[in-house]
Length: 513
Image (cartoon, rainbow, N blue to C red; front, side, top):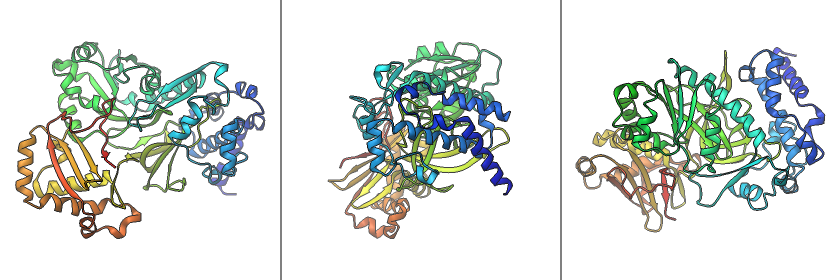
């Protein structure tokens, strides 16, 4: 047996000690209510190995997480609705390995609604037992109500785990100044939203900082908050972070200098906005905090110089999968799928969050060891031109590159926001860009491109954004044959032509069907 085999075998043995056979398949709801918490298992693992769980070898982390997944399947099988779903797909017991785990069907928002709204029939421990919290979605979904149910006990565990992780591996290196240190969030108009409860729950458990759940703030409120002495970090939705230089126009220089970390929510922050933030706040570092309704902390950007997101060890199983639900290789893009590991009472297996991620090499120590991935766009960020599907993220990157080389205009630097409008019935694809001087920019681009330049810009850029399965169509002639017209439109900042959700998010694609 090789050293690697010994490590893997020893890891599996330790995982089996931590979650023994009698806990693996509870026989009743009462058994579930008496189960030791998974958070306790992570702490016990750290005591047995002499290092924090976050810094334990990946073989051991993987073994304990897999043992937990086996337990979660056993828990789900106690529930009639989950049992029916899993039996339909041939799942009648705990998976023997990750290949069997990947046979479990992916869940989506419809499954989440069926399980945790209305009668909430997917709960293993019924709502009548008490001790639960209902959280609503406030994101860019399909406009339908969406709720999830959590055990308050397990929610508190996850807040503590992820808050400690943020303090130790993310904020600690940026908030190094003398105390007091401050952590604000401007999320959530009302506290039933996941952003208000769950992200706030994590932030309030970061050690050594003073937490303020501010909610939406005005310029005077921001000025008041920034008058507090000490270094500051602020977390908000992407659009809210982008507005900070405008909101903080009246801040004195010492207050601007005290702002050390700007954390934006799920998605990406345009380069133009990054430049504005760093010009206005001289010491700020910009980091991503990636969260979702079912996952209060999916991934954290630990280093402002690298876009990689790191999972919080022991919080969720984060999978990046292909169209068959199988893990993609490092460097490949796939669908983001999350299973909450702290969910004895309300399991939700393999939930698609609606995002695309690129799987990146894991952090392997010394110190922190964890899985990493990089945001690649929303799953809905697809441009449908007749029967072909184009990645809107790649299409924008290609258009930006060609526009920069032909007209000298870099959309990343001049645009506050961009958005594609795809009018399928009229066969018109428009890229809207919000810029300071809309008329001047439009005139300069029109002069540089010439009469047929916009069409040529799109037909040359779009082929590079075809998916692997459409690569035979990857030429300008195929784009011409779609019968589509193409427009590049410049509008003023905050133009109503760019559509935003009720919570201020700007989807990359608006599809007219």
